[in-house]
Length: 510
Image (tube, rainbow, N blue to C red):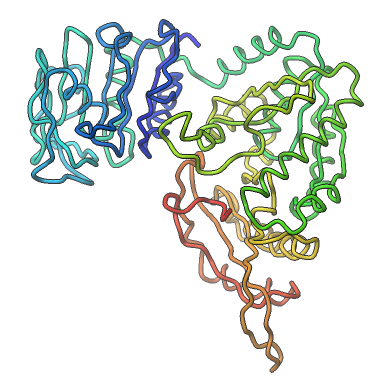
């Protein structure tokens, strides 16, 4: 990429949002752990230091090596990043007398400052810090203040260093996007060329160069990511792409047949493989969600290894891995952010499987994948499909997996998803599904006592899955769903609706 921004992650929950805001400006960026800087910094035209839950005053404070950046590449410090620059370069950071969290307003802005172009005094910003900069480093100049924070923004002009103690990446900072544009475009001189068309053109050329005439096997899931990856690869290598759609026994009701039928009309070379018994047998008796993921990932590898031997001279395994998958799977040893959960399509292949991995979407967020899909002229119906987890219903069934539980949850899920479509609510929801809980509850049906399963319905709105809010579905709709599920699905006598957001909860329950 010719217009690269490097974001150094110090463990902030907002780091991914910085990347999202930068991408919205049509500027390409990458997130790297602060303690694992790229060896070659020449390809980056700007660097952003993220916030952090740590304090620069701590002995264990994240401490990056900035010698190759400071004074050489335009640098923006956000919150912890601003305090880090001040504290370790001659300024002073101390505990705040007034802890400032949440909304604040810029009470003073230096006139004529390009960093604050089109941003006026009184603009709302979002604070989240318990330390504050009390003294600026040498040659630094104050740019902005709030009522409680005198040094809300500053710069070291001769080194092209800018720093702010608020978060421009969150929506609560009303002019945050403008501020980032001022820094990246006006000060750092980046061009806004990161578009879906440009991505397709660049990626197709890179895939042609990387893969050549080799044969590639791609595991289709029916979802947006693998579909876009397939069409992108097909555009690059055509008949050399061999797609496999595996029935792992954990798909939605009738999904295996319906998805295969849809792919027939897309010009892709697709083979359906029913390996449901293989997956369910491997999962028998396992209750731990992380072990479920590992088992499913392992069986997927085995299935693809079997199928690879049927495709003569196959050299590559393609996956629809996207950026949030990679971010959520970073281990504590690889960066400051703790692992949330592993993803079955993230990581290396076993030594016995002689396929190289290609992940054409690995640097895209979900909404970017959809925009790329639209550029590739994939049907809106397929692009608008709700995300569905790779491990399928295995992580929506709390506890062990049985064929009976899968069949029960498939029926519940079908009623819920079809209901959303019938009520015109499907496109208002980013992801929806049902969870089978490992509890029984007492009920009454036909004057008889029942002791049956409880299911939880979940519907969230989001942009890319990094954060999500629960959807306030109409009570009448939820009432209808509850009645239909209890009346039509034997073994279920109670329905609840999940109203937790991410964070602190995740979208899936396991």
